[in-house]
Image (cartoon, rainbow, N blue to C red; front, side, top):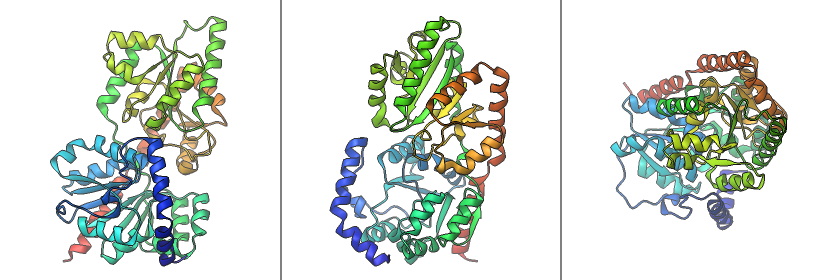
Length: 445
């Protein structure tokens, strides 16, 4: 497929695509600005000063992954333009970088749809010095417009599964040309680098995964640890669950809870399960499923309203079997409260979710069979003794309880996770050095 044909199809199908975006926005909730002028590269405000480093983080996961890179660039005195395609990405960027947005060293914007005129106007308005695309977000017209404008593009913390490679290859020359226009590519692993080169990427090197440079909010970590110490219960976090996964975990929790009640062992060693859906639009759905299962539960927002770490919040939590994590940006708190982390997105064919934060905090990790998005990380963590991969939710729950019953193995596995994360850190520094090298080349002698 040629870029001309791609652009024609995009324009012809745009009413259907925009209708689909509108339906997605209604389901997901939040501010999506589907028909906002900026989505088409049209701006009323005065253009910002030229020369910022533009970072595109399409959604929630990429925005979190980009945080250490953004912090490093800001600390070195660079201005940053951060763009997104989804409401969750925009909200997370706003939450994580509120102080930088207030001072103006960081700006946020929607990335426009990939129409030729929209992408051209976007780049003309913002005039970035350089662009960094996080993980795998490549749009043919956007990349072409950047090359035509003389703006170097970096694909950073890049990943590409074998399945994604096959899908991309079906588009033929279009994506090969697109990857070939990227100035530099920093891959997460050697396997990712080899697949990216097959698609035509140039100057490919292995820098590692940004998620290993995670900067955990130490205030949230300390508050989570303090809450857990006062609570006095064993805690298992079931984090980042996605559609189709909650029901299986809720059934499993109910089974284990009923078995403990029948055996009369509930009060011997109290156990609190944390169920933390990844997307906010599913909080109420998870609550309804917990209620239908007859499990006593309390929402995280209710604990906050009760005073978070106060006596009322602790008493309410001790009466619950499940804590429903219905907040965003608090994963360090949830992991710090827990002794074991089961990480979702991997118990349905969804590719998995980031588990590196849990390992960085010394929490033994359990994942399911579907981890294509984190293939190398799972392989390496399993080899390091930091992670166990199981086939379904029931096995995950049983494995978590076994770890709690064996403190020596629990500690050993958690420490292996800390060591593994520390050994793989450094991706951000490598990419920042590459960015500054390209900026110096543009500036000339």
